[in-house]
Image (tube, rainbow, N blue to C red; front, side, top):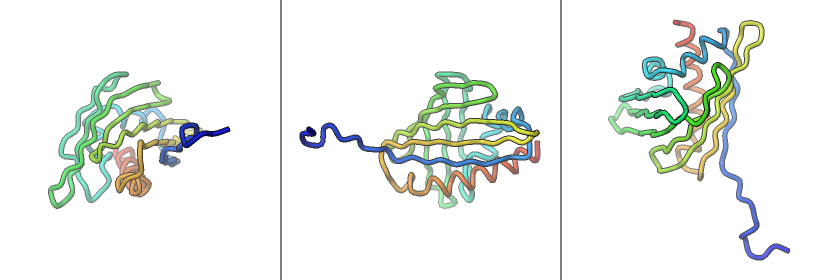
Length: 150
């Protein structure tokens, strides 16, 4: 018998997206590995990246600041938890509303095309989490353009 709410499981907000790129997995994965790459595509327009720091190794930092056209900034301060080249990247971060986020990105290749799966869980629902699907969709569009230029 349940007493009170102590035994009830509260499901955290989460997000899942899939996108297929007409590019080899090696190239798509590489776009996630350096600040030079990430600063070109990771921030959804019309925002820009005002700073980006990447130490691409388990335990390494992943810090990025997104800037609105008005100048308001949204920092993300994270660490890479797991990296399996070229299959998976897991990072944990705190975003501007003090929300803890865990992101798992997987890369699979079939016939020279790469499918990227993004799974994200949030500590709590907020304006940032409610806009995450739209933001990620725009971000992955930018990744597509970045990979096409590479």
